[in-house]
Structure formats: structure tokens, C-alpha cells
Length: 250
Image (tube, rainbow, N blue to C red; front, side, top):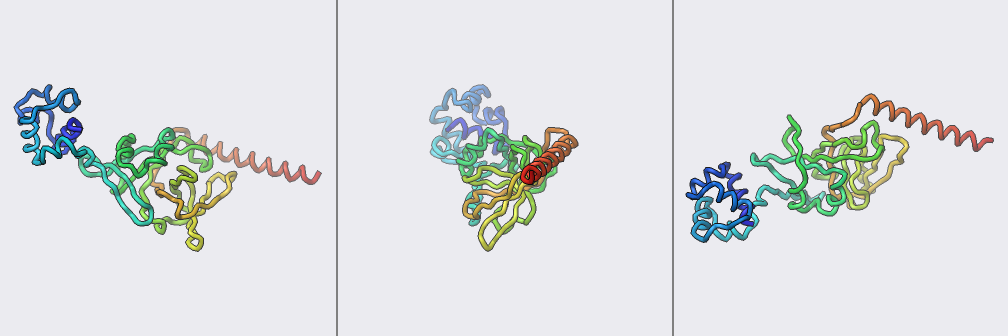
């Protein structure tokens, strides 16, 4: 814990290893060993370090101050949101890829889990809370499987706007990317796919853990090919339905 705290405090105060080593009157390599957890300073040096950062020695060696860059945002409608911030106090964009989906469903409220997710950068993005989600399947064609959806956090169910696309997080359905409508009378969301092969379905408000609104996406395939594939799939589906109707009348 001391090693992580030292590294965190040094970065928080925006000083280099050499600057801190000079202030402590020790070699930089020795400080490096402390930050890697290879060795520990003696009590006199611990006292000097604690004084330098204006904290108690107990805080330095026993508290998880390295988690200070984690925030937990609370809201009444959608429970708790765990986020991380960078050295300039700006929210990171954590990436939830396909491999991380199962873990995310179990740990989306755990700040330490969120801390370990990979971070991505998106230039020119407005201030706010964002997360990236990798989507799979073809229910939202022409949005290709494997695309990264950059989303902004929705604090309350009533902030959902009809017919816009959202990532809906729930234990029942996992992470789904759908076009959404609210039904306040029945307290349900109607989730629609842009691919008409997939039927719409509903989810109760109380089963929703998080909602993230589409802001932008990163795609890794040729857009023209994606659209052509989507049209071909729709034509194939129409042909199957026509064939089935014809068979009924034979």
C-alpha cells in the first residue's frame, strides 16, 4: 500500500521521482524501489515523507489514498456510478470490451474494478461522464459488430428521449445497444433493434442498472459494405417470408 500511495502522492503533486528523491535526500533509485514495493523506508524517512505531503504517517502507510482518483457518483434513479478521473480531474473514458462484459455486470459499482478497465481518449468531447462499450451481434445493423459506442451517462430514467439509441445495462439482459422508448404508465422501457429481424421487447425500470446515451462510435469496417450487407439481409428475410406464405397456399 505504501508503494502505491507514494506513487499516487507524487503524481498528484506533479513532481518527478528525482524531485522527491532530492527533497528526501535519497538516491532516485532508492525512491524507485520504494514505489515498486521492493524495499520500505525506515521510520525517520517515513516521518519526513508524511511531513512533506502534509499527511499523517498512519495515512501514508495504512490508508488507500491511491484510490483518491476514484469517484462515486450517486443518484436516486440509477443507483451508484463509479468513475475515474485523470490528473486534471477530468473523467476518463473507460472501455468495456466483450471480454469485460461479464465482469462489468457484477462489478459496475466497484470503484477498484472500474479503475482497472482500459482507458480510451476521444478528442473534442464535451465535459461529462462517458464510457465506451464494444457491441456484438447484428441487431443494430448497419452498426457493425465490434464497433465501440462512446456514450454519456444518463442520470435518470426520465432523461431518456424516445427513439434515441442507448446502452442499457441490466443483470437480466447484460449490455444491450437498442433504440429506446419510455412507457411511464407501465414503468417499462421498450427496446427496439434497427435490424427488423429482431423483435422489440420490454424491460422494467427497476431492472435497469445503468443507462448510457449514444454520443459517437468507432467502427473498424467499411461502411459501404456494412450497409450493403444490411440491405441484403433484409432482402433475404423478405424472401424467406414470401416463400413461407407461398408454401402455406400450396
